[in-house]
Length: 98
Image (cartoon, rainbow, N blue to C red):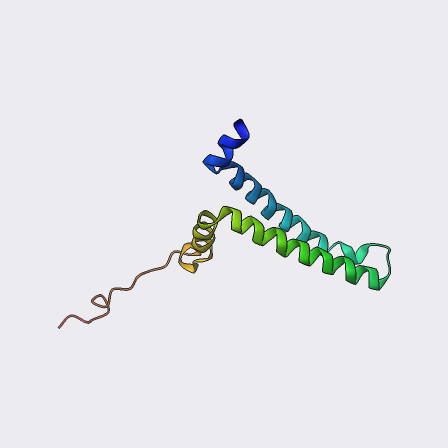
């Protein structure tokens, strides 16, 4: 009964979405470790391809589960005005007083 309530509240979808996005980050990190494995070059290529495909699938499924909540936060962090203090110039301040 508690699982049904969590699904209705959306908390389970949010949790699964976050776990999938974290998993996609782990898969991305593994891409940089694969070249150091003692396997053939062809096997490394296949393994990296599988990791990239798995990373993309887990990322997009996680984004689909989180929906608008993730997109709004993601856009907020990608806005350059939030990285550095942006100054809004007032055109009246640039005029010389006459």
